[in-house]
Image (cartoon, rainbow, N blue to C red; front, side, top):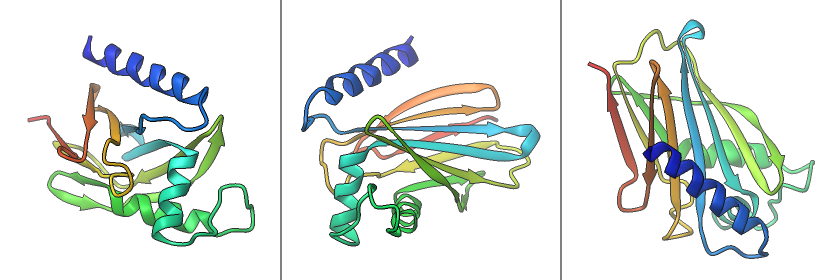
Length: 166
């Protein structure tokens, strides 16, 4: 039931925000799924393009934009999210491989993968995305690990979630 409420809240916020030039809600959505037969963890992080662009400009380069095909935006997307979205599997920090991004209706979808994961007994997710720019930022994090589904709303005050499968 809580999962349904999180989805409804997420859809409501995205819908309301898409009708205004500036939104007052700061939210992202990250899906983390373990694909056992591929021994990989697949990650999709969705962020409002304007919020993400603002933080990349502030941290790295004022000239960065998602509109410029010639820019090195992918380098900075990978750099930023690799610093802010961290995953430990079985108490070991894992490196995420950046696959790429897509832009759709004002949302940037960023794709990552963690390879060579034969099993998961516990997973810890720390998601501090956009906390350095927006104090009211909320990061919805949905996990599907070993057929267990769980959702968390991570905030600046509580940016970490842990799931154990023992």
